[in-house]
Image (cartoon, rainbow over all chains, first blue to last red; front, top):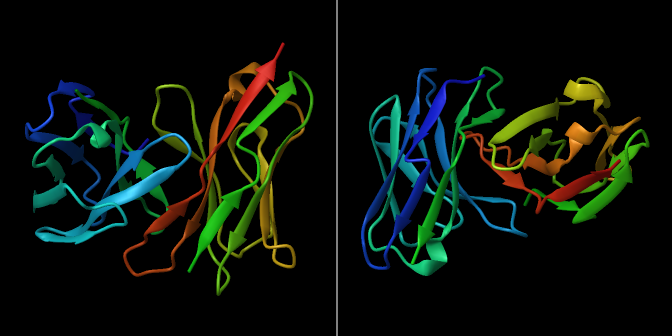
Length: 112
Length: 114
């Protein structure tokens, strides 16, 4: 299994507060991704990174920002959480096959 | 643009009977296609991957999928369902970009009856 951890695994927060989720990899892979999973939508890409300090937007990036200051860590920040951001968040990295992505265990976020 | 459509949101089978999960893709070129499985409250696990080497792809846990270009399909099958196959399954297509982005289907939930 790819070495990917996410923290926290569960988070309850209030509307308007900032939240940061962390993805940590031990595989030294260049590409990292943040997705959200909602019923009926599969997984949707929020942001991704193609190297240290190199990031780009995905299809549902509004309300989210990311940072990658070192290869192993990719942070997702909700600047001011809203109830619509209640979701399960997954981090992924590319494995040895290039296109194949390997996923972390997920973070379940509830915004009240 | 590349996309996938999973034709069934829910499939229910009896233990020991075949499983068929249907996926159609849309792509302007020969894509890479994947099936992932997600067990309850778990992350996603790669079941199998098609990259044009062979049209019939064998994966883990007895699953296989066949790439049919003429039908733009990539259906997932298993000859005999087991209780442990109860999960959500995602058909996924590569967007073919240099940054290896993927597009996910909406998912098919499989329940297995004893």
